[in-house]
Image 1 (cartoon, rainbow, N blue to C red):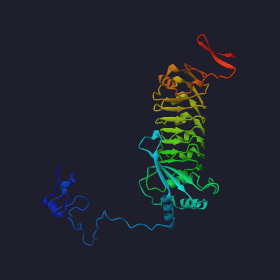
Image 2: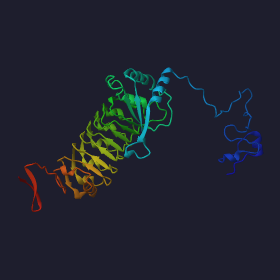
Image 3: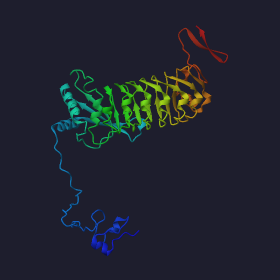
Length: 375
């Protein structure tokens, strides 16, 4: 479609153009956009009595807002912090990086001052920190040795890692906690609604899974060996999860409670209170890693025949799981690569069982069979 202004249109400022904006510029340089009929340096036409309308100047920037004393102090703390970028776990891929932020304080009084500033100023992200940091943060605090204990009401409280992250303009999509204590709450998590990555493994963090139920963008959740408890069903809406680790937690429930999390590639429920049947996994066809050790699962290996992507599988010891390795080729391949613990399952066939050796008993061949014999 030819998009030009006719002579009448040029005089009256009436548009007659379509898609191609460049074609709208006639010999008198009449602009496309909201100011039809306007030539350079000319104000747009206006009705009698109407105030002249000024076109916005894109080069103009709003005057800087007044910076409070609190903001100056907080910026000083962040400016003095150390920022170290490092690769994230292999699971995340090369595009994901972690910025480790290390705060060093001259003493407990300075640390307390910093945390008080966070309490007063970060709920509404009023601290204007620079762009450009990678979107996953690993926050660490240190104070001089011998300056007194850092209690869970100070630097180790998990709420402060969320408050630090909330100081950045960029949307933080990942957090890693190390050595933190405290309680996960819905209020603290609400500061970061775009979280995709949350790793609090091996911390003293406690709380209930229900505080996570609104983090529907989460793809990676690691709560291994924490004090987090609750019902597995609280995670049923986190359908984007690819990695879920509840190893050694007090989380309980049935695996069928999360049968909608079919994007999972890694599932670790070892030592948790979750139970179920192997057949409950039949829709988890993306699984590559599965750990159900020391759980109340039961079933046959053949129940896993649709999980053709499995590379690592740990189910034992568990006397309620039966079957033969030859039933499922994927599992047989994992066993051959020594990526299983099937030697510890007493009711599986097609595996070489672990034999306990001591100074008084030895493993002996008797025909085609392994037997034990006294010294």
